[in-house]
Image (cartoon, rainbow, N blue to C red; front, side, top):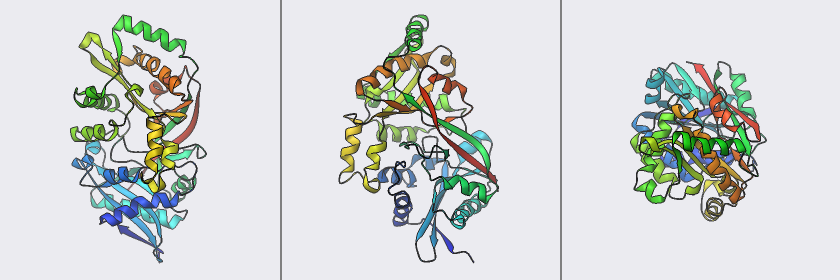
Length: 382
């Protein structure tokens, strides 16, 4: 008889316990970067997250007989993504468990049972509701500092995936650490000068008025939708989701670290965007149990506004396909790198990239880079 009991999240108190489990499991871990509790609540609350316009989900917690919580997992069905990719997938995300194979087996069984009950024929993950949620289980680079936008997990997680059996690779990601150069690489500056003259492409730096009143917030995410539409498992962001992300991320954003490239031959059409932010990894580690109060807010503001951090996160970089060979990315980096230098940033994080995406990885060829993390999305037939 199993010593593990699975409980479905039904109340707000349950959801708080579900979220808090990560802070308990990773307390004292030097590499883990915990999400803010408030952000987790907004994402997982079915009445607030706009992704529930086209998704459904259940959350499960694992307990030992003595009442100790031992694991958690979210079972998610993104109907829009399933239709786009012609699959019947139940996703698993927010997966955390103690090093006990009975616990991980019970959690995955809960996801499988939920998926079967909804007519799904495969289970994939870790994935969230959309690509803007953390995705991919860390399989290499466990000694590296995590980021706000990615998952950190203990080394025993992928070991459990092997032991449980039935899980195969569905997609692998890589992440790079990019050293900020002392001067902008000559290749970037030469290409930037050339494409401004030849193609009439130009950098636009945004103001708050541009983002919130001039429609540029929406234009950037519309561009991301177009650039990412053919990437693994991508689910197009809805109008309401875009509004939520604009309201969530841009009020405190340093717009000097966001660059838009426009085609002036096409009526100032946005053709590339780079959304980057000061690394919040160390600041978030100082937010006790993911809470901004009493002192966490100070560390976050110091990183965001005073740039008291050594790194920069390259959160979202997108270039329209027809402009990739024209060097629009070089124009973007020739604008951003001097700003990184002025702020004293020493390195950047590329975030997750599909290991087969040579177009993206070629962007870093003129920089000093280190491949320092790998992660995987798994698949299991139900």
